[in-house]
Length: 188
Image 1 (spheres, one colour):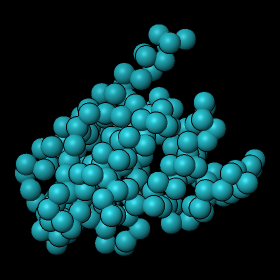
Image 2: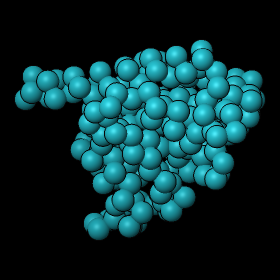
Image 3: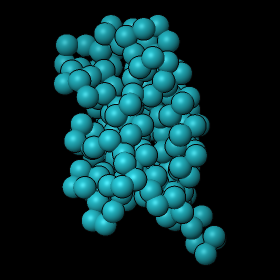
Image 4: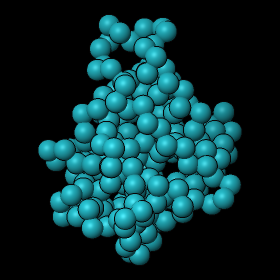
């Protein structure tokens, strides 16, 4: 099984990318977490540019999402919401509406921020956007507040409670991905 990890942060030393690395350690051995790092290259969404073939960065995003059994998003919080570049990428991924690459795909959302709330608002906003796109959003939340103190020098999560919460989200995402083929057969 392949899970795609997408960090909503473009920063090189991103706490959210570190959170995805921490999640990678918690997946079962038979699950591969592939980190996608093409967010910065995705151009601003413009319906005039939404043609076939899609811009290269958009085609890469759509292919990565289509090739994954599930997606784990880690989002920072910018102005109490989702970072613009992440929302923009999801706008591209949501087209065409009826057959987009996230439709019925299991997704989970976690987040880290420098402030006390751990990107709680942006996680809620991102869940709303993903549900509107048609993704199957897994319950569970990991809010890593004061993120600069939650990772050690090697970038590993150093808080057992947060690691446990992250493990629960990982477990729920894997279970949703494993249940997906059976649900598709029933729907057919």
